[in-house]
Length: 113
Length: 114
Image (tube, rainbow over the protein chains, first blue to last red):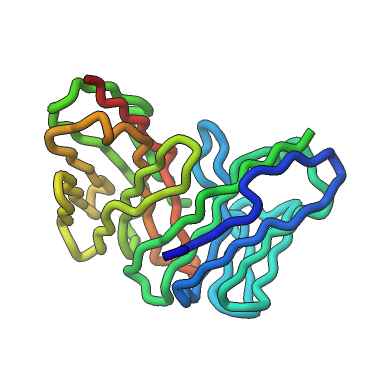
């Protein structure tokens, strides 16, 4: 029962570097999401996808890009990391029906120095 | 814009006490409300999901209620245990906006002491 798996779990980047966070789910879920969690601000939606090949912007999309080439994978990219992107990133997935639970990965702790 | 508030931000109780966590939201146009638990350094674990047409859901020692018209939900934890110590988050799925996205509160950090 893997559920939602995020890679890597920890990363330190220098300002201006790029990286890709990988999210993989094995539940055949249609919907996938990337959130960031910051102290005192709760979880905020970065980007989301309602199906393979589709993506959409969330609440705080600037500085991030995403791709959903395969249904089971959702990638989050940082092209030029900034200290403001220091955060814990969570991926989540849901089945296509409305009243279904969301399942979350264990998070990626990213520090940009 | 939907806003979700959880008060208090932190709560400390002795073991065995029954307790209530509160969640309020500003827009009652929602599909459902979900309660999560988050342990330090971990991801979120779903506890209960209440559909907008429902009044409450129960799982073991947990009972969640929903009053959509007043924009409120409560999570009742019976006979609290030290293992219940965690941050509890509520989230709503708004009717508008598409994508079945979740809007989260900032959580209540619960500590159950021996």
